[in-house]
Length: 437
Image 1: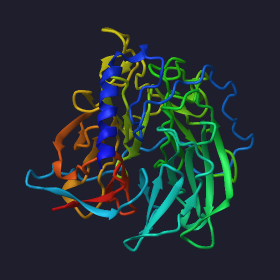
Image 2 (image 1 turned 90 degrees about the vertical axis):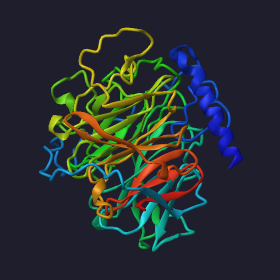
Image 3 (image 1 turned 90 degrees about the horizontal axis):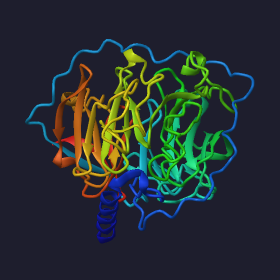
Image 4 (image 1 turned 30 degrees about the vertical axis):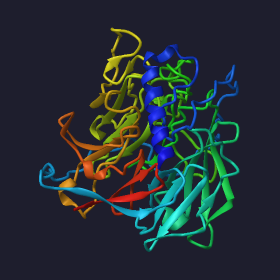
């Protein structure tokens, strides 16, 4: 515990010192997602020159290529009662930098991603000793590197296929698919199939989250490539995969294709894979499983943290520009004025007086706490508070703090099980379920 407190203090001080933003030639030390014991090293003098791998020439069949459909009809839900009190119930402990919790549809097990390259299973209330997957020899392990994402194919029960996002030993992003072995609790490492590679010029801002959207397509969040202030201009370049969210079709046995309904279909200046732009380092995004609305938490530079929401009725992020590095949160970045034409404003942001690195969460759609239906939870790594809001009328409404949900150390991530119940993953190695008290 003393070491964790020291790290948090170091991070907070470094973040405060970096408020000058783009003038710093070294990567900013914000924890996104794991706190360093020392500031990251100086970036390499020249970025890799090779472009991301191309999609296969022949498109695979299935899933639908259209954007997420309009929100289904769902009954309005009331704000959480002021008398409602939430608490944490321990699910697992002793994990090493748990960054994600998820589960295949209809599966009672919990799958937990450890940054060092392991996927662990909680089954029948116990943490299994044998990892589901071990890719520790494949990943780099800088403070913002490692095994960062996991998504199960919507047809996992039938095809046993899942996808991971990691930084390889050269620091570049890799998205690969695997299949489960004959043992349902162990994956087959020989089934690895690399689907996408993206060169990373620096060691930080790798994003790394990926999930299947309501349309059955794979969404991938990528940061701006790192350093500070987006020195290579990735955030506003729709031809570049960095600083963007990607949307690709991985239904084939190898590679990927870019759906014809991506923005490139109307604007050839966009890379075929790119779904939206203007992101600095999206540390967790999610779709509301009831409405299809897209929520993105984007880690700020030196002043502001932001959460963006794009309703399904507006395309769930399709072709949108979230502003970085023109804006940081609701403010202009690096100046008192800027051209905001065409930019999407965050629904919520906060200054570094209140934290230093936003941790995005999930909209509650479970059944154990009906009063929380439609409530989006989020946190800040440095401050470790947990808060929530509801998205209504284009605004963040019913904002609330939940002191009983702070795990006492940095919140690395949120998780959701197959039933829609939510979890908090902490830098103390613990995983906790959110419960009503």
